[in-house]
Image (cartoon, rainbow, N blue to C red):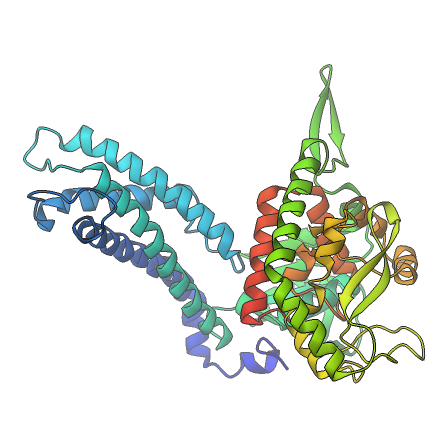
Length: 490
């Protein structure tokens, strides 16, 4: 069983567990605050030295001693920390994007640095504490504040992730429901121990025996208040596949005990409506239940990015692509490329191009889903699949306008028909061009993983598209490929 199984919960002493629940969560925030203080002070001192040693600006004459900048350092540090606080950067999330955090830190440090500079003029001018704060020093302080703060927060994150994996700073979690949503949530938590959950059990409408993925069914809805008290539950996730509105409200009422956090997994209505927005119709309020983000000028912007990315990619990677073609021919008989019909925009079929990664006779007995350790995959093919290199020829599809750099991954027509019957609103993902990579893929949903969960991630992408989201997905794809940190790549 993975790191957050019930068995692992017992490997930590009860005294340490009580300490983690009562004190270590607060300690996590305090240590992050102290880390920021240390990094900001160090950044200012490094910026002070850089002003003399780096050639980007005119070297200063008779620069004041570092100690004279102490009031400025205190003002700068306090201002940036206040900005962090009001930007909720001390509201620690269990999972977050490093890229989003970088963007938040850059924006907040920029505002904090400029505000501190203004406060310097207002508070310290014409006093004994006044010290020259030239623009060159301001630039270096800003730059190193960003670098050191991001570095310090990454070290802090890795430390607390390690502690969570060791069984410290975890919350007891109760799952309500036994359908596929509950299955997907349990699978995700089990495979991501750094989230810091210990699943104590599963509750269903009526008492039942057995387990789901190794976690036992421990009672019915009526038992929830007792289970929360007896098992010291801190988080409850309601993950029902089909339910009535009144049923959810009753469950929430049963869970409202102490400091228990309650989360409800989106129901089927969420698959249809996406994000709700309120519009006005001559003074009459209307709910917009479907507002696709990618249209108008945004389509032109995305297409321009596709053309630029695909064109540069094909030019820069062409020598490696030629080498790959040669190695494929040397390893096994057959064509270099493998063309497969996939469903794209508006359900239109197109021929998706890949480097051949399987034996030439791999589909003699019919086309089947690729699984882990598939014997049909060649040695070179396994390397290419693990590094996503077999997908590179799809840059040609992007250049031709059949695909995009980012979008829902395309499926074969037979799978599309099957999934369309089984999963509500599955065809919604065909409102956009298929992508070489996607939001679901960078979140580990590739290969033999839940199609329902992939559909949810694809829906989120379609209805919340932005250029920044595409950039984040591309950066995460490249990073996961370099570090080989994307699970289910086979």
